[in-house]
Length: 381
Length: 258
Image 1: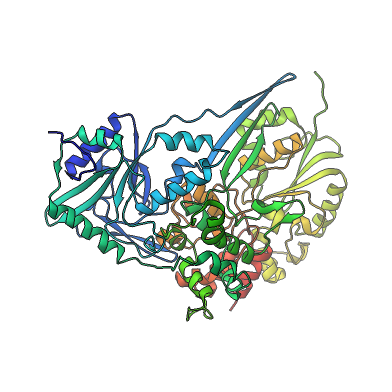
Image 2: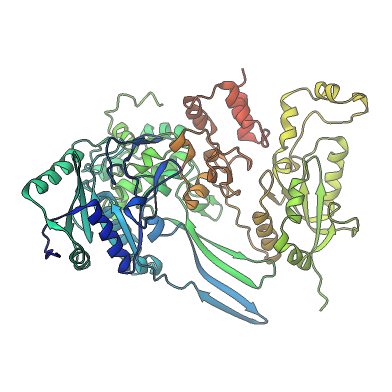
């Protein structure tokens, strides 16, 4: 029953989506997607559609995330959670090499490159944009990160057009979503209408087309294509946050001594959560460890953050000793100097830094305050 | 092959012994430790002692008596490197609660003959008395970090004990943030890493066992904790546990004193 898929749209039922997941696994992929864990939607291994958070959604605001029941059985009816795909592509901890001493000989063995084939299920538009930004940073220059490259080149992306915007979402402001436009193998739009539960499918690569050709599906009707458009438009018009983004480089760089930096520093915990949940932040530290006997040493790389003192420590002390300077560094890099450095903004408007800041610092509010049109600027918290 | 091993001593001050037990708890590494260093003074492990000077002194516990205050001076004199282990030695420990009260009143309640008790009005960190070369945090310390610090000492390198927040450990572990996700009060954002985010990994808030992180902003965290329902008394108490006398925690608890 397999039809040709040449950029055309198809329809899958929930059973059809299950068949797609099984086909992806049969192609040798480890399937990873949203799962319900610890009262949140995190990313983990999913072996079937039964592992997806069916009928769950979330409520998000600055410093607040709560899981809630939906009135339907949607499989992708929530916004992005605390995890992002960088957890897999740019691992939180990675051994780089191991050295061993035998007598006077020292041998150094680099960590083998991974050969896992990862299939990411349920990747949102902002997340695809984030992966593209990390591609630019981690493999887009003379010195490529071989671990990232190996995983990224083999990764399969099954994207989802968001059916709703979260309370801290502003991808529309950053031109990063909610519509999935590129960078996917297969893109889904979940259609829920009464008892009907369907997925409109677009293919974006040869591998996506091969996968779709291997499972039963039917062509989408005009009404279904229109319904899917409606889903995306509704999401786009219901963003929880917004941020004017066309002039951020000039705005921030001409306001490096704005009093708002001092004000936000009174609230900022310098805990680093914003950078660690950010899907584009890429900074790491390298640590060397040796064992008790001195016969074995290892070099590890782990996620680090411009909010830690060690990160900007050069001889004599930390370059950015104050919370003000560290918050300013993060925000101006993310929104302004990233453009000079990599040719695009470092922000995709996913809202994670707002939701997962333990004290709810809101990057969109900070920009508004610096712009000078925020009535609450003098009244923090 | 005879070789000279560095001499290690372990000294106890006012403490529960949990941190020195962490050395015995090293289990898999214990025999290697004993092979790489000469355990010269460690009464909890062996009555046999070797005379100083010592290459590395590990000091557990806080200074709470006039005798302690003199003894730590002697220990410092015979130690090439002196490292404190645990919350008592680095901040004064839970017994530093006396610093916020009148210790004579406590003694009168606890002891039949309080006049037999010779004690100081305060419990203080070792670093308030002598120069300390390195402080290992925790209540108790982590065996993993203790082995790391001893390994670093033997290799003559800097130990990897990052002073950032517990949040970094949570995020590296992939933990859900219990404060954002569940509304559970958590001291993680102001607490020094090292435990591997033990409590949040089990969906509990952080209790601050490792004391303040490098740049703690406790007033901001407290403002948020009060939004989560903690009143001044609760806020005062949350900072007054094992690191009550650590500067940032002491100041913050005092801000919430009624």
